[in-house]
Amino acid sequence: MKIKILKSKIHNVTVTEANINYIGSVTIDENLMDAANIIAGEKVQVLNANNGERLETYVIKGERNTGKIEINGPAAKKVNKGHIIIIISYATMSLKKAKIFKPSIIFPNKKNTLD
Image (cartoon, rainbow, N blue to C red; front, side, top):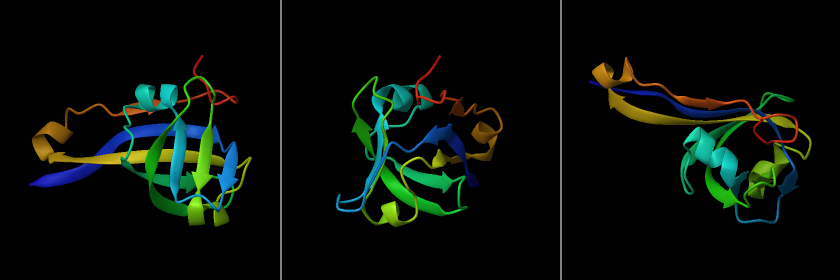
């Protein structure tokens, strides 16, 4: 049996830009991607702490050391600049591996950087 479990989580970051005219996706500062073990193109879930919206999209690598968290495309109708979001990805693995797996969870500061 295989189950889907939490793989990565970027907890409570501030959206720095929301661009409805972009193709789609969420742009994340590369430092945060590395720390959370998230790669470009990976499917993620975005949870909006301001209004409860949840959406799925994919990741685009953002410029390192900028704190950029940009919501692009139609998702910009659900998430605005200044909103606080949580970004999550999941992995599928055997129950045996899932019991010992440790997800990568990070807690950036108010500037979307790591202390």
